Image 1 (cartoon, each protein chain N blue to C red):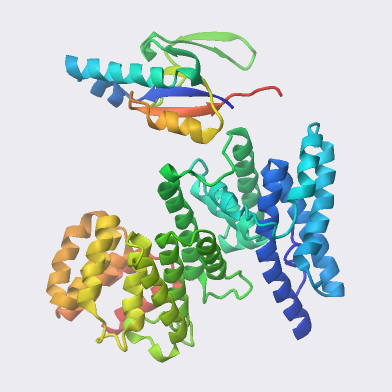
Image 2 (image 1 turned 120 degrees about the vertical axis):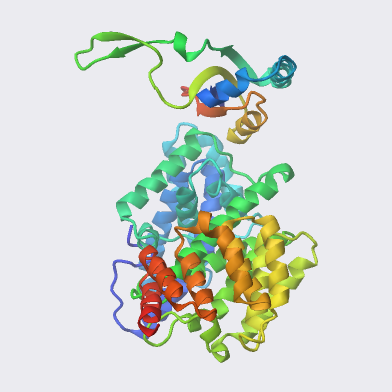
Length: 415
Length: 116
């Protein structure tokens, strides 16, 4: 399993080899999903397709590392894949029909990109959320089992089982391999977007962590969102999610200081943000908005764009952000969105107003550390130090994230 | 593909059903009738089952002896109230049928083992 991305090979410090490995990883991500998508169509099942892709990547890894990446890596992979797929089809009693399919259809860039069907099948609502995420990363992005397992802090064995179960269910339960029809597209697309967003969040929370070897899932999430935007250019929510991810990534560097401590938005050094990327992502938000089909990802992207384009924290267009949160609440009426709206309300109408909003949310959010941390901040602004302290202590008791804990502990020592 | 749709419900669903007015009950049965009519070509055998309190279970113990008890296997929340065998293209088509089921409660979709 470790072969595909060279997880078993320790880096030997040679820049040339590192460059080759990066180039290999890029080609693999582009081609693994394409290959898998076509193979599922031809072979008719996920397990066989997986086997072929895996074999091809292992062979390519060995050969390319020795001989360099060929001029046409896709063509090279497809030749190997075709040979292996024929072997597999021969094992099957019904191979004649499948063999007939292999010749004409298995061409790189034959004009048909099956990856959209692949994505929708991996994210089918009949699969659990965990299975959807794992299967998408494995099959569409070509991540190794080891990489996914380490990103989600589960054992390789557990993750491999999860994947096997999911593939078996696709076959046994008759989950179709196709892009859903117009009647169900919106609902099914929402499931796909949530898988990508979940992947992004997982990467975002752990980025800047103490394990540089851990795969950067935010990169994979952006790649997936951008692939989806290419395959479904007329879906504004896809563009919204892509913009949202890019806006977060453009500012990711300033989230932690040199010592790995969490830096709040108000204190971040905005000069270090990638302003070119922010401008481009903001354009993407506008492009999506012109399609006149607003949705939660577009609105969240618009909110982050407001923050990203403000010259400083006090210069932020808070009334605009408050309006956007009202719109977001209409699409996504959750207590967490209401909490963020309250924070924006506080910036417009003062901490007492925000605190009154928060009182309404104390029931559903009592177990959520950011609710108590936000309350502490507002109480401190109102000069109610003792209550603020108690709220910070509540927050501290509710989070295990080391960076968040450090910030709260520091607040408690200062106050 | 062949599936069985298991029409299930909790005690709460059963109480809500029992509380329906005569008119509402008639309307509900009419809806169910229309659903069966609309899906006629997909449905093979189908039956409504007598309530769970009429069930008798036969369970085999470690020695292989049959032990007869009163009631269903599971004292769980959901009880099976009926079933329909269906023949459809894929899970999405089965899901569409389940989604439009007017009987409320819950519908479990189980693929049937077929020998190819």
